Length: 243
Image (spheres, rainbow, N blue to C red):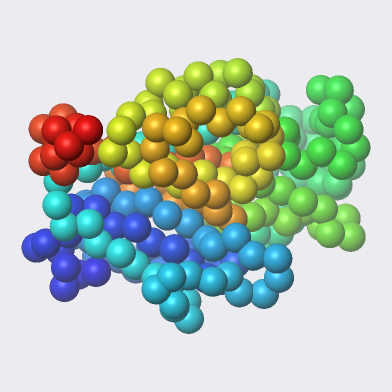
């Protein structure tokens, strides 16, 4: 990627595995992270995913024409006060610290789902969100809560609830010809069969996405990241002329 800095206008990065993305992204040099980036982890039933071109760990494509913007959008929005996820595993915790004291994480989330009228096993409409607006998808494994992306270094997060209408409106407002959309497979099901943005921009659904957080590429879940051609993009103007 560093060798392509002089030529690359945007990067598309697709990971084959379910872990290791944060380490990879954190080691990218500043001149690489300054280039708009999108992508995520290949969807998979089990084990490693498949990429084309084939890759053992990660497949990277460089777009060498035009001028691009990386924009990340979510359909989950923060609610409530921050709480702390105890532990040192980057993706696992079993106890949370709230303003009311320490409580087992599984019990905490069961109560929260009941309070919001969600089913006991609904891990899609309820997620957590970090200070830099990364949404993290959770699931339960024997009283341990497991995140689909690394918790923030502080391990402080807030609850995030799905607002389907607001999420759809935000996505449609930013859909435009020439854009590439990288969305979460979890959102694919939540958004239903009517997905009009797919008629406007090529869309793929992944197991976790690279999001743009304050100009930095980070790994998250339940998001869309759009590679959008800026106004004056030669490739976009060419397509419009052909049409």
